[in-house]
Image 1 (cartoon, rainbow, N blue to C red):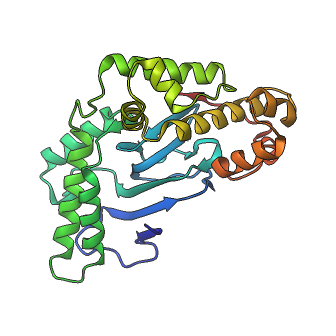
Image 2 (cartoon, rainbow, N blue to C red):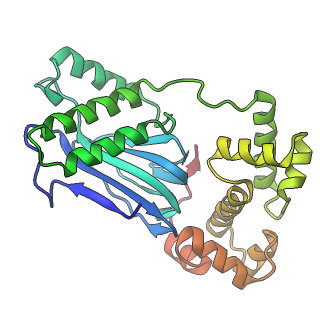
Length: 291
């Protein structure tokens, strides 16, 4: 899915849908810069279809995975976690904030309900992947030239707003005891980033088959086990580069990499720059908390 976007600053506005500002989709295969920006008067929603991405807002980093929606409110400055967007496949759209003067042609009392729901909405919401079909219809409507175009775009926006503000609960089906085991593994990786277990070893530690472990771990985290572990290790590297004065070589061996060159190659694949460049870019900035 190559990058595709419809932006009313470049493309013609959608007649009778002044609330619509931007819509897009992208599949990033290597990390790209995503610096601080904001959308005055608008909400932005991002749905992750595959992979993971982190978002920095204020003093917090919000982690998202497949099926998660992250949103920002009007005027909130935000960026990719550590100023990058990680390899992933995602969709996004931007709309003006709800108001009571015919927003999306809704009665004032209904637009007020949506406004109140958005004010209470958690920063990250698990909605699953069913909304991807709605997003594809949204894209098709934007590309259409029929007289029904405005109606289709407005209907798509209302459908997505309902999905995001009223997500279906209980979509994940992984057993609770296995989830606890996954959390234990993730905590151990954070504490011992040099640990390099195989999928078979991880499966044995949880008492399930390797195939079942692989499938359920990917369902829980949005990524295969080894990919997830490598990403987590790189995040530990970011923390060490930011919070300590340890040399890149010292961090290399602390994380269990066999050479600084290998570490730099892996780091750049996830973050977009080398460890030395990343430390230089982040020097003087306060590391955010993870949420």
